[in-house]
Amino acid sequence: MEKSQAKASAGARTGKTASQGAASTSAPAASSFMSYKIALLFAIACGLAVSNVYYAQPLLDSLAEQFDITRSSVGSIITVTQICYALGLFMLVPLGDLLNQRRLIIVMMLISAGALAVVGTANTVTVLFAGLAVVGLLAVVTQVLVSYASTLAAPAERGRIVGLVTSGVVIGILLARTFAGILTDIAGWRSVYLVSAALMLIMGVTLYRVLPQYHGKKEPLSYPQLLRSVVQLFVQERVLRIRAGLALLIFTAFSTLWTSLVLPLSSPPASLSHTAIGAFGLAGVAGAFAASKAGQLADRGLGQRTTGLALAVLLISWLPISYTEYSLPVLVVGILLLDAGVQAVHVTNQSLIFAVRPEARSRLTGGYMIFYSIGSATGAIASTHIYAYFGWRGVCLFGAAVSAIALLFWALTLRQIRPAD
Image 1: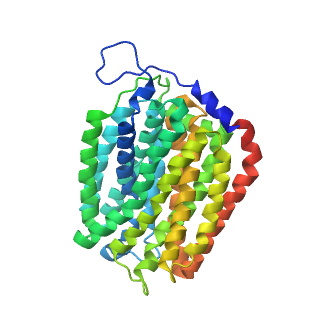
Image 2 (image 1 turned 90 degrees about the vertical axis):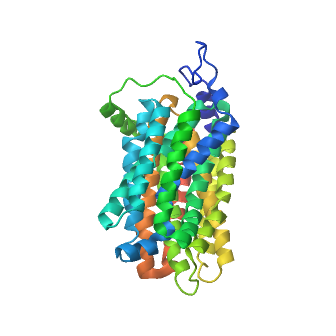
Image 3 (image 1 turned 90 degrees about the horizontal axis):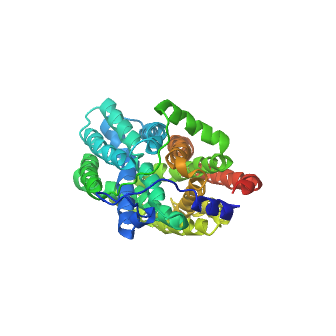
């Protein structure tokens, strides 16, 4: 059961911790590092980093016009970023179990700032896609931050901390659209990436100054062995397989909405500005609250119930979303339901898999998030093609079908996962 899994994780932490610059040989508890201020900084850093993957979504029409990309193919911008994000999850995130996570986080943040500057100054499609590929590859610093936060947190409050940090991810994903829309209307789409480059540089310096050290036990593995062990974890851990499958499905639904939403909203009769379109991301911020609450429920052993309820909410959300072309207030209701459902499942997934193998949290995170990225890429490319041929109703039917499959998958695997919890 999930309660037994949470209890098992309480005694699984190993390794010593030392505060940055501490002279004493007696290491304090890791939980002393995870104050509210530190957790909040983790959340802000996660929000800034993950936003880089999503800035392009409300800008697809502008990018299509600037670089002469057809509307049916413009979703490939998101797909390329997500594919590279998936590569980063497999190739970079597991390094957190091998290298100093603090140093890894800082280096990735600083290189990301350079890649964003390249995107903001791109003059050809080739340079644009190359820059976005590197941005996607290094945006996985978000997952290194989540894994590091779970390591620093005390076992009894790990779900709450993961929920708080993940809420920063949620807000970053959603406010990326608002931020990008406003800046584009004021100074053009290039300003979005140039401002983000400056923010990432500032955050990298800030993290260098305040991130705590953690000198826990690292796996004695070579890099090839580390990558192979990610695959082995899927073979060995049923919980990881099932929760990764759910991640693929819920983020296919999530990306289906947020990638294609700009298309009906920017077309007649709505014909909204980038600022107005981006403002719809504000409605989804409620998902951040659902994410935090879901983590607390997982700490109490209620992860399965939370998952089932959240998946039902996700399925229902497509009904009001289907009225986008007729009523924008009804669309807002649908967005609230969809984001709350997706993020509640996402946080619950992470809380459960982190408890499986404490010594391999970075690899568990990377492996799990690969399926998140595959789902996001699938939703991006599928939704824009479906919209081009079948309109908004076709997009909603696809999103509802994926959500229904996710709910069915959870129900069918419920008995299988319980013995492992």
